[in-house]
Image 1: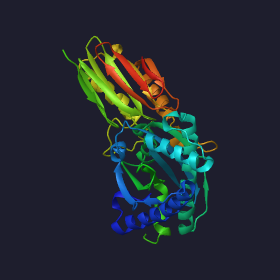
Image 2 (image 1 turned 60 degrees about the vertical axis):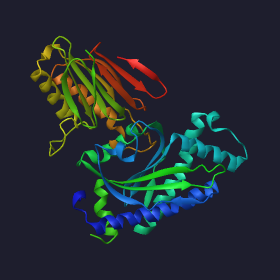
Image 3 (image 1 turned 45 degrees about the vertical axis):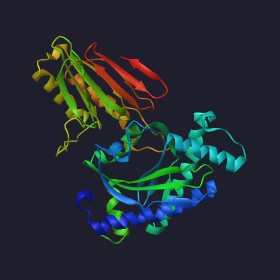
Image 4 (image 1 turned 180 degrees about the vertical axis):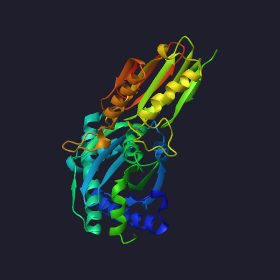
Length: 212
Length: 163
């Protein structure tokens, strides 16, 4: 595999562009789902120490909802869609209102309903992300069934450490945030997408992007 | 004497004399391994991330892999006056945070491999593993106190248990 530490600015920027294309498509999908304008942050390619993953994203003990999918094919990678607990619940409240015209206050929504709605939303967001980047790269891909977890941020991110830990101490991640604004009382719902390329797919990625 | 609380991060490994409280937050597939000799009043903890170093030890932290962490921890215990035959071990962690039906990948089941490799390494050194809370799909926060040599395991939605 390529040595992550030796990647130059041009290569990291090219990878960031992949994040940009993916996020754009994911934002469109989420916008359709929530019937809301979605704001997207400019994605960042980041080199993160596998020992400080949770700290990099927030409070390690924070309770979050996370959807994980794996993409197999030309460019193998994993993706996580992650939301803090309150945002996940707000999103379910909004979805229910949107799709069925029913209102259930956030604190009365059962956990199973939040998990299943988060799985659906995460799956749509991440599939859209993957479709766009595979079109860009000219690769074929298959997406796994999504896995969902509701737990401490630190426990959830162990999966990233497991992917990168066997080859070194640094993970190459593409991070971006989507948020829906303009909710009735000025509330905002955010979700974070983390693209985790398989370490041995990085070389193919750089070659497809013509920066290797 | 009041206990000092020491929080161990990913791949950290530490041995210290009582009284002390050793804490690790939010273990997912990682393992929290506790060893102690209550007579010598020495305790240690390691936050293990992966089962095997596969001989690839560069600048890596010694606590990162089960195959390097277990011997290093026992070695450090003996240096602090612990007697090997008296050392007892407890472990927690090794969950599988995400299950993807129909998909197999090494990193998805690394929790179970961490558990089996840690147990194997303890057995090789003839260290008695007297309690464990491993597997499942929930994260754990652990706290080991030398006041009663018990390991408190907190799991989201399941409360606290002592092993």
